[in-house]
Image 1 (spheres, rainbow, N blue to C red):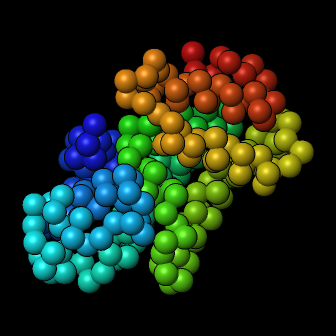
Image 2: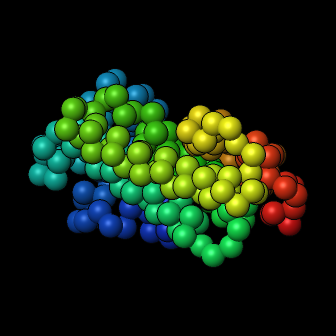
Image 3: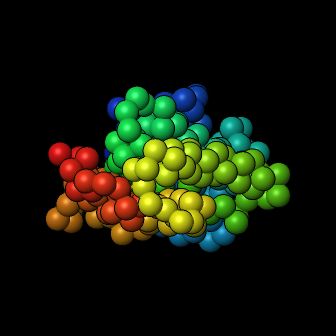
Amino acid sequence: MSTAEETAGGEAQPWGEVTPDAARRLLLAAVEAFAERGYHATTTRDIAGRAGMSPAALYIHYKTKEELLHRISRIGHEKALDILRTAAREEGTATARLAEAVSSFVRWHARGRTTARVVQYELDSLGPDARAEIVGLRRQVDAEVRGIIEDGVRSGEFDVPDVPGTTLAVLSLCIDVARWFNVNGPRTPEEVGALYADLVLRMVGAKGAGSAQR
């Protein structure tokens, strides 16, 4: 499945916020190239060729290769944050909110696994200023999940001696789906999301774990 057939967050029109069309085509080409070859091994010529453009055309829309990666990373992290924030702000128990947060976050990584690999694993390829911005978004992602777990501890739903460490473990578990998920594999994104939600509820010692997704 190509990046064009994936979504950056479940939209029917992936990367629809990127305009004009030429800029979006270049961004899609960059995602595919970075995921396949890695950021440092990819050249601007590679990206332009995949988009069916000349290398000179790329510089009309993006000053540097890093600017492309920065935009991909920023949009991806903003979408990931929105997914978790939406789940965290829902009404209901901490158990239900954590299950929804994990399930939706996992689905995002499975459905857009090519994009997610670039978003999650090319952070160190960014320069200091761009990296600092993305690190700030990651801290907000962490805070959303940590907040749900803290709510569950306060309400007595969860038994978690180390909230920061458990938050890191939960996020790492979800993010790693982008590494191994196979569209031709035995499980759908929805099934993996439900499985991981149950695993995380067991991890935090939720009462009645295994029933929240039923």
